[in-house]
Image (cartoon, rainbow, N blue to C red; front, side):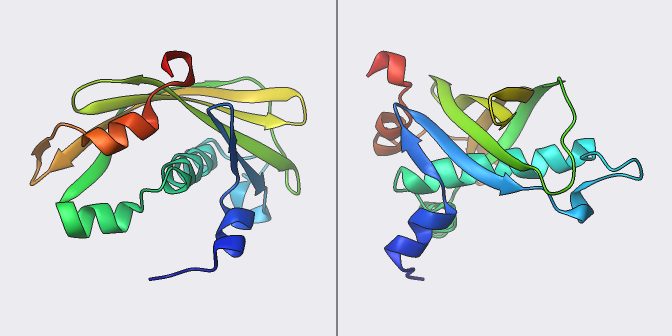
Length: 150
């Protein structure tokens, strides 16, 4: 499937100095009965950030799976909820590579509202193929190399 590059750039966020930034608007459906973002909604925001980070690095996950049989699976996730977000807030999901190992990647993520950090996360993602851990391909490894190691 081909997409208009300008449209992809508008909806996929940007990468600058190794940090991907994705704007996310909080919708009513993202909130709980008290009007704040429900904790599970942050998981979706973080997933969007990771997916668009990978996409902007030139990797389409669907093609990676179809052509090479690879997929990413979250192995561990640590979240710290610091402040609440509310309906209609505009948030920024930041994603950066922390470490790239043989078959896994650790990504550091934050959710911000303006300068306020609302949530921090560390996410370890395993690369799998045919149900087993698989070494990350060199081209992807090079693209995911943390900025501090570049």
